[in-house]
Length: 286
Image 1 (spheres, rainbow, N blue to C red):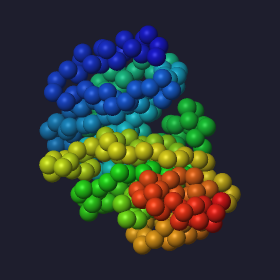
Image 2 (cartoon, one colour):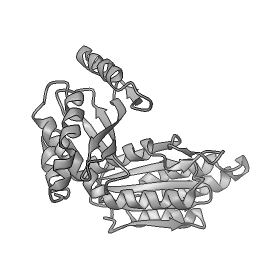
Image 3 (tube, rainbow, N blue to C red):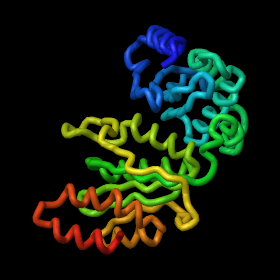
């Protein structure tokens, strides 16, 4: 991490020092830093609107733009997307310099003006990201694994809403205790989905208290190939057998994904006595 980025993070932590205003969500030398800032800005009714801004600083930041996710219970998802687009447009004017605090100040001062404008949809977001994320062009497929869902009904509705808002297609798949999410769409939208998945209180803990998803793993991420099926919608499906789940992957042209990642999950959840059955499955799919 560059020294000026360290200095920026330290300054942000000092500025947003109130309860729950600042939280570092993840940090690595390869993926950069993800953190959340909770702040307020004047909305359409003159009342302050609470905003949750999640920033992803890639390792090459500030040479490239930060990733941004906007969440607010008082705004529609379309409004949140519009706010994100405007933040990215503003970020382009600040390129090559640490910019997060400037972006937060700007949205605090301009939220009401943005909300007064007609919602622009997602077209301008593609333009705003084009320069910094050209490598992400085209459709991608990402396979996620969830350990469990305690508040299943609410969790499923939330996943469906995120997929719809971000124009992602695919499947939320249940087979016994195995829970998989298969996402297909623009890579930038999939990244935003992952930020929502990891930072929102989407489930409940053992005591019934709302909590963030801490037991999700990305099993695979790949650009859509010619043999891959284009999903037309995002669907929730229950499978009664491994054979049925396998057919879903094969129909989608994702046979290799199934054999490399899904079978391993099945094996982990089974007794060792089932090893021979698993070996038979491997012969069928490889």
